[in-house]
Amino acid sequence: MMDSLIDGVGEIMDDVYEVDDDFMDKLQGVMMNQNENPPKVKGGCHCGAVEFEVRLLAGFNTARRCTCSMCVRRGVIPVSAELADLTIMRGEDKLSCYQFGTKTAEHYFCSQCGIYTHHRRRSNPNQYGINPACLEGFDIFDLADVPILDGTKHPRDNPYGKVKWIGDLSHRRRD
Ligand SMILES: [Zn+2]
Image: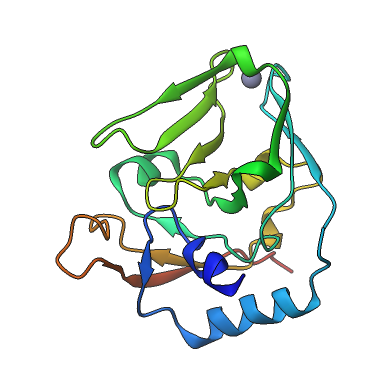
């Protein structure tokens, strides 16, 4: 389970290195406390055409910011889910799929309002990245500390086959 979690950290990760200890401790803590089957959460695009339900792998603890050409433009901080844990309830025909480069990853967005809902990951095609901002009750301050990884060097494209964490993003409410 932990292996699968570690694999799940990041759009571009297969073999993780330089995962900082705090981050892994946090994930491990979540796994210890997590129910076997956390409830599914409802989500949707902006215009309402697309609705889905998803069970996240480890809540928001897999959130990460990526600097690849796609993610840096999209500006989303995805979280991970297993393929079987996402169900499109409505509007599957409204979803468009964008692919580029190796065309391994599948980036889905609503063809009406343009909102990115989820993507099937390149480094782990058994998982989706989910846009947490599409989930009911989302609060941006739930993403207090988000690690940033170097998406310009995909583990499948660099000689190390590994991912590098290069920074952190914080969301802090003003007093
Ligand atoms: Zn929409």
